[in-house]
Image (cartoon, rainbow, N blue to C red; front, top):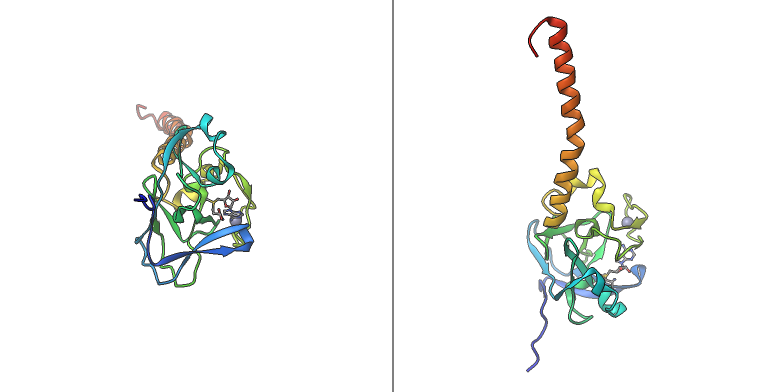
Length: 195
Ligand SMILES: C[S@@+](CC[C@H](N)C(=O)[O-])C[C@H]1O[C@@H](n2cnc3c(N)ncnc32)[C@H](O)[C@@H]1O
Ligand SMILES: [Zn+2]
């Protein structure tokens, strides 16, 4: 008996051909509510070194799930793997492998995520054809570093990227705190208050 698909795609979506991205896409065929679960990726965990041994079709359907760890699909036809990138996405990650709607998605609309939510290394970089007004032009493994995305996608980054972002935010705050302390010390010094 065939084990069947290992990944999950809500029955509210279908996979269709879409020429603009040179491949297929996931399209809603019924309205999807904000926060609703759309898909769950599956596969086996591989290291960065093992990525090079994967066939192009499987490599294309691989997602980074932690530092140096990637989820590679078992077959090239797992339905959630056809979710494309958009620089103005309507869905985002919940945890490492689940995808939820970030807003109400109408029927006949393509379901997209921003690959900045999951990719933290340069294993899947390409020129973007999302066509959105906010298009970054190129999708890279460093897009998660863009501060404007941190608030826009709060709660929808993969957990390992959330940790990286927290560290970056702390590092960005450090000099400001030090600057404030210096300023306070300077003011207290000027008014005669003990620092
Ligand atoms: C996980 S697959 C997405 C499904 C893909 N369309 C397919 O049919 O296999 C990721 C690949 O799709 C293509 N892709 C996804 N979003 C894209 C976009 N906005 N612009 C251009 N290519 C995109 C890139 O080649 C990327 O490596
Ligand atoms: Zn784009």
